[in-house]
Image: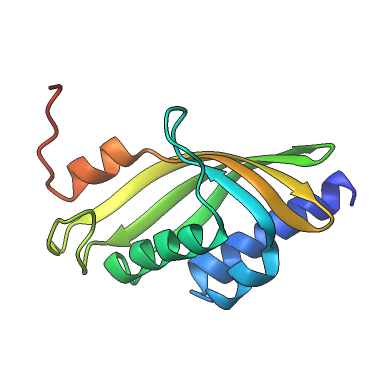
Length: 140
């Protein structure tokens, strides 16, 4: 695939999964060998764990909307910067719904192989996200 085709696939993923809540598209776009790296010290998660993770976000923030602010591609990799907007209406990370609005940025790099996501690094600023829903975060 070309860099432009890869960018189009990432745009479609954001629109289908996040903005239209079409979790069926996750099965279409993720390679069976897909690996999602959430933090450098944790083992990567597989396609099913990623779908479960996305379900949690969408249930906790049913009105969530992502806006792509920047999108770059070179070779088989796409980098993007997004803004998440939504309202905390369901339990998130053990925090009951607060009704708080969130405005969070995210940075991701996705490697695409044979028209599917093969690897994925980065994500939203979860510290900011948690603070906006009222979590008390300590430096312990």
